[in-house]
Amino acid sequence: MVTAVVGANWGDEGKGKITDVLAERADVVVRFQGGANAGHTIKNHFGKFALHTLPSGVFHPEVTNVIGNGVALSPRKVMEELAELAGRGVPAPRLLISNRAQIVMSYHVLFDTLEEARLAGKSFGSTKSGIAPFYSDKYAKTGIQVSELEDMEALREKVEGILLKKNLLLKYLYGHEELKVEEIMEELMQYKEMLAPYAADTSAFLSRSLKEGKEVLLEGQLGTLKDPDHGIYPMVTSSSTLAGYGAVGAGVPPCAIRKVVTVTKAYSSAVGAGEFVSEIFGEEAEELRRRGGDGGEYGATTGRPRRVGWYDLVASRYGCRLQGTTDVALTVLDVLGYLDEIPVCVAYEIDGEYTEEFPVTTFLQRAKPVYKLLPGWKCDITGIRSYEELPENCRKYVEFIEEHLGYPITYVSNGPGREDIIYKRDKEA
Ligand code: GDP
Image 1 (tube, protein in one colour):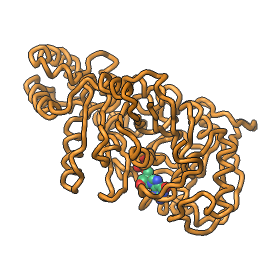
Image 2: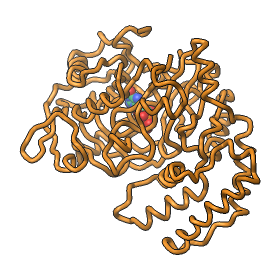
Image 3: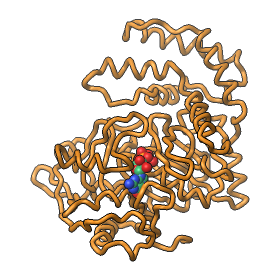
Image 4: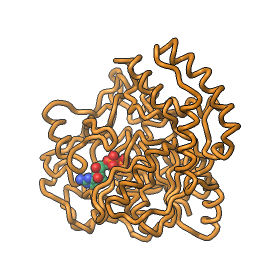
C-alpha cells in the first residue's frame, strides 16, 4: 500500500517529522517532486538534520529511500547530504535514484540567480537553487535525464544545442560570460560517477515492492498553496505538491495511494512572498516566530525568517481537499501554550462579502481574515503521550479545527522529536 505525506499549506508544516515517524512502519520512502530548494527538519536520536533532497527515511536502516523521477536532482547536494549523515554517525542509508530523474545543472542555478537579480523587487523570492529554470527545461524537453549519462557522446551533441540558446540569453539578456561545452561535459562526467551506484529503474522497483505487499511512503515537499495549478499562482513552486502527482513523480499507480496524510501546523507560517491572509505582524508575530517550530520559525534551507500567522481554516480546508486527505496530522501544537486566547481564521471577507471558500489569487489579494477566538490552555503540553491527557481547551482547539476542516485528525504532534506524537485515533488504523 502507498501512503502519501503532503502539506496542506505553504510548506514547513512538519512533513519531515511526520514522515520520520511513519517511516518506522514503512519499507520504502520516496521523494516525488521538488528539489533542494526546501528542506525537511528531522530531530531524532542521531541529532537534528535538515534534509533537502534525501528522503526522510534515511534514518531507518531497513528502509529503502527513493529519489523519484519527478524530483529536481542536484547530485552534488545528494552527495553532501550523504557525507553529512556519515560524518554524524548515521549508518549508510539504502538509496535508489530514478534513472528517469532529471539533473539540476550549474547553469540552472546561474539562470535562477541572474533572473532574480534582473527582476529585483518583482522577483518570486526564489531560493536560487535552479528549480524554476530546471522545470522550464524539463518541459521544454531540453532537460538531462540520469539515463542519458550512459551515452556521453550523444549527450555532448545535446549539450551543444542547449548551450546555443543559453548563451544567447546569457550574452544579450544578462550580459554574462558564455558557457563552454567542455565545462558542462566535465560537470556531467562528475555526476555520472556520483550517481552510478544509485541509479535504477525505480518505478519497476516500486512495482515489485507493492506486489510483495511492502509499505511505501511518498514524501511531498511544500504544500497545496504552493502547487503551480491549485496554489497562489504565480508565487508557487515549479512542480506539483499534490498527492495526486505522487503517482506520476514516483511512478506508481494512482489507485495504489490508499492513504493521504495531510500535514498542517497548529498556526500558519510561510517562507517567501505570496498571499497569506491570516499573517500577523509586529510584536505579536515576533513572539510566535521566536517560540515557533523548533528553535524559531526560520527556513530550513535558507535561514530566512518565516512569515507567521494564525491558523487559517479556509486555506487549510482547501489544502486538505486538493490533497484528497484521508488523515490529518496537526503539528507544532505545543508552541501555542503561551496564549490566553488563540485566534483562528474561519472565513475571509472579500469586498464586504464573507466566504469560506479559498478563492483564486486575484480575490485572495483583497481578502481579510475573519477570526474566532478560542481559549488557550496556558501550559506546556510537551511530553504528553495520550490524547485524553491534553488539557481540555487544547482538545477543544484540536476538535474545533477537525470539525471545520471536515477531515479526521489522526496524529497530533507536540514536539519536534520522533517520540512527540499523539495518536488521536488507533495507531494501527
Ligand atoms: P517540513 O518541510 O514540512 O518538513 O517542515 P520543516 O522541517 O521546514 O519545519 C517544521 C519545523 O517544525 C522543524 O523545525 C521541525 O523540527 C519542527 N517541528 C515539527 N513538528 C513539531 C512539533 O510538533 N512541535 C515543535 N515544537 N516543532 C515541531
